[in-house]
Image (cartoon, one colour):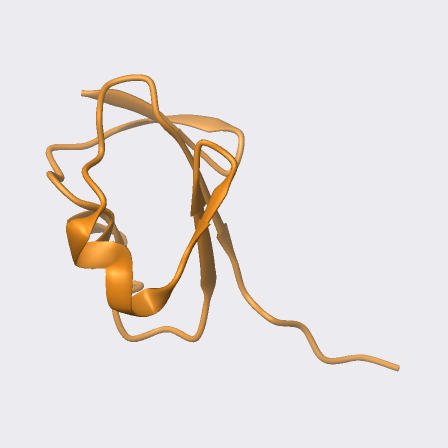
Length: 65
C-alpha cells in the first residue's frame, strides 16, 4: 500500500505502526510517532493499523544547545 512517511511517499506491507517501524529498522530506536497527525505512544504502536494513504511522522530527539 502507499503511505506518506515524513512527507515522502513510501510503499509498505505493514499492518500496524509497529510493523512499519520494524520494516524501517526503527523498532528499537528512541523515537516519537504520529499517524495522521495523532501522536501514538510506544505502547500503542502495535494497536494502530496502517491504511493506504496514511501519513506517518517519525521523529528522533535531538541534542543541542
